[in-house]
Image (cartoon, rainbow, N blue to C red; front, side, top):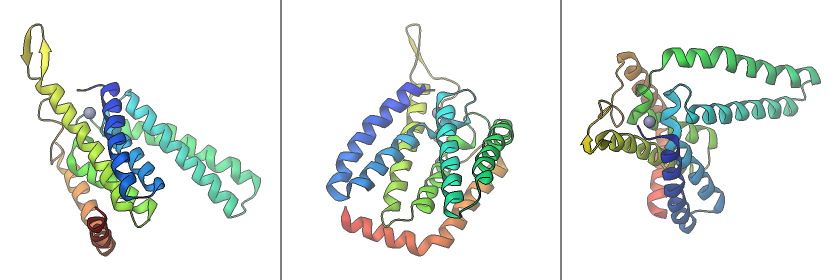
Length: 215
Ligand SMILES: [Zn+2]
């Protein structure tokens, strides 16, 4: 398995290249978002690895986004000061003591999170949250980063130098894959992708045709 430093450096370099290419076709905000999405994608699969830096950073980013959004929501809805304190505290406690332990219990390293469809599923979140005319480009950037991660893991397992010999690690073939080891994980992931596609197919097709015109 390639370590965090390898993944993040590769993500930054690939993201930089994509950012340069994006700037020629899209405005600055879209290009910056595609850079961020690619870097995030390049570390995202290791969220299934307990105590990994990737998990720590991604969870922190996720928590900050949730709390910021809750504050924004409370101010927007003019909720009283008690809610401004209570909602973020509740989110923090639930995240720390319910979500994190459950996530650790039900995930295995190199399981469902190291699969191609999981990258597609996670990329759909960018499409759902951003809702701009170029959201599909941000989703694609995330998938590129995600696939680079999976390929790097495979490469590091394929070329494993032990002493003077090159050996293949047991983990070879467990990262770049279409299916998770668990039957129910596969059903859930593919079903969610199908539902997402079914609901947003019109917008997805529209954005793809715009993208082909731009590129
Ligand atoms: Zn990995």
